[in-house]
Amino acid sequence: MRIVFELVSYLLLASAAAATTSQTSSSEPIAPPRNGAPPGSSGAATDPAQLFQAGQDALNRGRLDEAERDFLKVVAANPQVGGAYANLGVVYMRRKQWTKALAALYKAEQLMPQVAGIRLNIGLAFYRQDEFLKAIPAFESVVRDEPESLQARHLLGLCYFFAERWADAASTLEPLWTQESAQLSYLYVLSIAAHRAGRKDLDERATAQLVKVGDGSPEFHLFMGKAHLNLEQYDMALADFEAAAEANPRLTFVHFNLGLAYLKKQDYERARDEFLKDAAVEPDLAFNYDELGDVYSLMQRDSEAEKSYREALRRDPRLLNSYLGLAKVYQREARYQQALGAIDSAGKLDSHRTDIHYVRGQILIHMGRKEEGKKELEASVRIDNEHRAEREKQVEGGVLPSPELLQDEPQ
Image 1 (cartoon, rainbow, N blue to C red):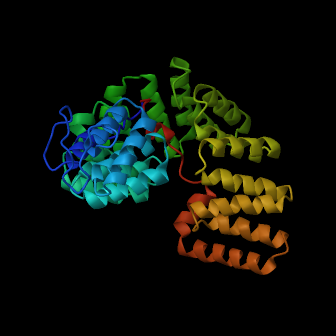
Image 2 (tube, rainbow, N blue to C red; image 1 turned 45 degrees about the horizontal axis):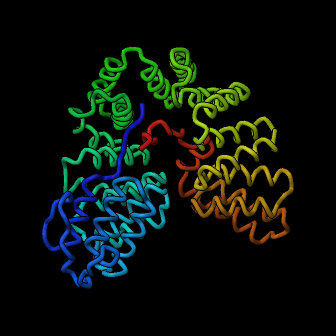
């Protein structure tokens, strides 16, 4: 079961209104901007208000190139039209051009700080890049201004969840019970957060509701299996995942999680087979290839590991684990220059990982750059001592990926 997160529909309406001094409906003709834009000519091609309306209509119809062209013309005519920047941000988000989206949205926020929808999209842009810590301040500001915003509260709760701020996740998500207690994904996250936060009553209530709503469905077995997997109860997890797969072999993420369970049990051949099955169901899910790279690496099949890691990065160039895996493969094959490039890419994504500094130090020493390598190894030890809990997570393989909680419905 997937959680649906759509771009804020009311942002377009707020943006249209912000382009003029009068509060016009989006279905009405927009008056010429009174904020310093040049007066409109007889043709729509040079009238900022009409250009804005044309851009909004194109955006509503999914014609992103037309929308981008019109909004760029608006800001060229008047750089103070915050609504045009806001809608450019939406255009770039739909294209997954995150850097351009955030630049446009920050400009819109500067010009229209009162519009919560802009801050919501800033948070969403970070969220969709798995940058949960960066998304939190934006979502917090929206919830603070609009406590009844279901989307912002749910996204904030999930960010807290992925950041392992269990108490914050539970307290943020609990008020959504009335609206979302029929959703298995919501109940799963709430029960895990409540359990980790020591809130026994909420944990029991969410778990009981999960059992009631799930009613033995394949989706129920998927989430129960995931709960067991996170508690390292691998045999129980396998039983639930297999029940889900038997009932619906094309259920999204069931084979992925079976692969994770077999990987934890060091049954590498079965893990490989399950990740391949999930890749057949979801060929664009980068995590399948990332995990396959790990499996092949553990099976000492480096050429297949390299291919899998590259497939993962082709789909998602932000997968740190794939860069790290490639660096280790290249190091084993004495391809040190390529190994250094891969580990440097990993370091750009997270410069505080112990294992990144350690592997980089080894690579540099093999390249004859012993002083640099020694400094990297020392940095690894220093970070190891400063963040021992994080180091232990890295040694254990990291937090289990949960793509089933991150996917959007097709739009």
